Length: 401
Image 1 (cartoon, rainbow, N blue to C red):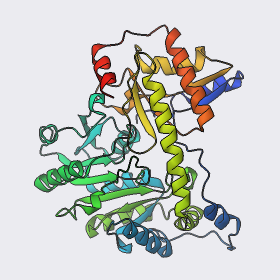
Image 2 (tube, one colour; image 1 turned 60 degrees about the vertical axis):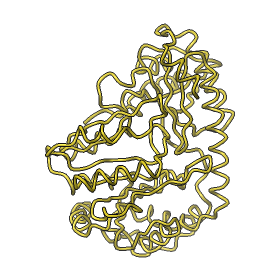
Image 3 (tube, one colour; image 1 turned 90 degrees about the horizontal axis):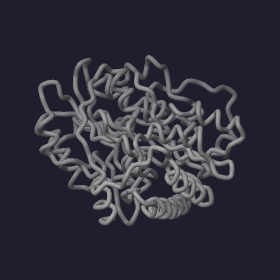
């Protein structure tokens, strides 16, 4: 199993805290946004004497209510399409175990959420990357790049939309292009759409569930973690019209008995969250995004495309090695006894050597802390012993932002 690039530096962060330093965490997508009141009230006022098992596919009342939510988003989901899982992670793991055999291949645009590699490893599946580049903001690579990788062992494509770690939002045409590839080669599309509510600048997400002609190929992965700031609830969903896939995935669901009961109660209550909550959250994240990306691009040698979704961005830094730099920040640098934890981007690529000068940042801190973090990054880059010269590629990219 690969180590998590998001969490592997945690021992250094713990040591920094033990030494009295304050660590600003931009390394992990743990929002500081308050969980909706309707969720907290549902848990505080819980009227149950037994915390029982649910059905293996989740409580019917929650699945019915969840289906109505999707239809309100113009995503045509029925109750029997939905299986509740222990987080989106379990949903994607079940999907891979169900649809792939050991030795099969799945194509994933890189950089991608690092745990996809772990899920693939659990299923005995080989990840084949198709590389997106920072120069165009990590847009979907050309269809020809996918076609070159497809062989007799290729069984599927995984998308994250909006994307973690890049914040890129695939356009309707890009999603349709993936649909055409899947139709042509009879491939599964596993789409991680957990950041659907976080789309900016008037952009709207286009779900794979709205693709035509590939009903049996599409598997939608979802989660309540980020939408309602409920990362610890561990409730996700595997959604598919393919009855055979659903039935096979149920065998894995039955083996783990049921998804968390308390998490489902909280998630069902979350569906009553008022629109005003999302309006406030959206305004907050847009402000954070605008500030962080502008501040990063004002640092000499730093390149950071403007993300249109999620709450992540990838920045290219004038450094020799992002693993070394991120560790150095925790062990050897601070300002006012404060330092910053970032995620080295190399762990979000599978192609050797890529991401070596890139880091992922999650702009999940309030403005004052975000401002402090940007100041620390700028100051650190001025004295980091492994600083490199600004490349011509970076200069060109910066000028186009």
